[in-house]
Amino acid sequence: MLSYDANPVLAEAADVSRELARTRRVAAGGTSPRAALAADAQQALEGRLQALYDDPESREIIDRALTERAATLRAAVTAWRATLAARELRQQAAAVATDAARDGRSLIQAEALLVATLHGRADRIEADRELALQDRLTTEEARDGALAALAAIRVREARAQLRRGLLLTGQMRAIIAEATPALTRGEPLLLLGETGGAKTALAEYLSRVELGSEPELVSGYGDITSSQLIGSHELRSDGGATVSVFVPGPLLRAMTEGRPVILDEVNAMPAEFLKRLNRILQLRPGQSFAVQENNGEAVEIAQGFAILATANEQTPHRYRGIDRMSAELVNRFGANSYRVHYPDAGLEYTDAPRENALLAAAAIADASGNVPLPTDDLERVARAAFISQQVFAGAHGEGFGRFVSTEREIDGRPGLEESVLAPRTLVAIVQKVAGSAGQVTLDHALSRFVDGVMHAEDRQVLSLILRSQGFLAAARVPAN
Figure 1 (cartoon, rainbow, N blue to C red):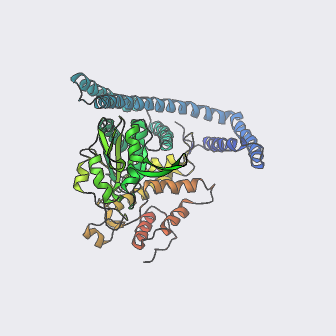
Figure 2 (figure 1 turned 90 degrees about the vertical axis):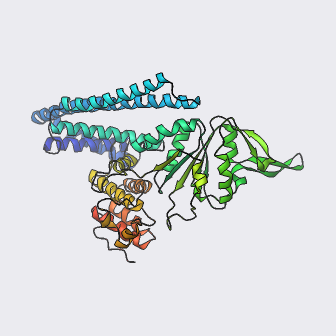
Figure 3 (figure 1 turned 120 degrees about the horizontal axis):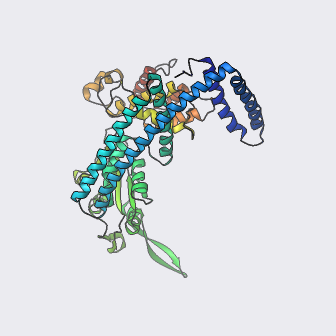
């Protein structure tokens, strides 16, 4: 296969084609001066491409490259279809378990056999996919091209997932598959993890996509009261008279309407409410709840109600207003407690952080999967984010000592106390750079992020991590 980088004709054709695609989008913007300028540039670029193709030698090179490229893309599309087919089989298997859970029963023998069969077929499809790629693409360059095409397809899929609210990594898919049957029975769910790890996004996805209902969302804060969550009486005017009317709160609305409720940062809620929550977590659809705020009037809990709670890790000096949840409260969630790790958790510090890189690329990709930042920049910032996440989470793997003071390592404390390049922070930074039309560099945006860190030692550690990936080369070490 001809290399677009090594062959000057192909390199020029590829550069002109990319610029032409961008120029056409601007030219389609109407009659503004910029659109008129782009229209002129479009005509010039089309002329350059035509001139290349009019030359017989160049035309032969381009046609041969396009033929080989088409074969590579066909192989990539075939592999992607196999990926989707295997995923669909696994989703069918999960749906069998979910349907049984919705009926309040375990799998019958025939269903268990069906689930095993579906997973077995998915395993075979995935194995055949890898063999087919090797058989159809005989050169290393062709296989690399197919993998690059598959990566672009994956970026487009990830972009669509992010626009729906959640990047479906392997971790997220596993939690969704296991948690959904329990949620359909009305069992409560607890998602634990560090800040910015997509706990709330996962809870919203489970509510909207898996349960099919718009959730009630309650954000935790220290002075919220039980009456604000469950409901309270209000004075209203009725025909010239003032009457007391009971107004249901978000928790009671979710119960009566058969919708999930998300208690975000539940461990920031006051102890008064958490004591009430102990009892509420035991309720299931079909049962009744006596509303103390409404003179004990009982309401029947509709099918579809479930409680999804999120909680930040209980780490000293990190999350203000966070209390340790009692063992009694945690036990109410039973086996439905899930720790949501940062992307790429479990990798060594030297491994490629593919999930962080995919997240960064998908956050700024266009509808065709084109990413406006250089691949090297995205890989370096993704690795910096990954390292900071592992240091923040206290993952003492090989390489941890490079970014942690001896005192902290001996004390078993995380290398970062309060700040981290969390997934949502990574997204915000690359979006700022990509949306600046070249006015803001990635290095500058990362410098701004570090400057905004209030904790002096965290600034030092983050600067060290970023410099290890080639950023902040000219930056001074932040002073204590």
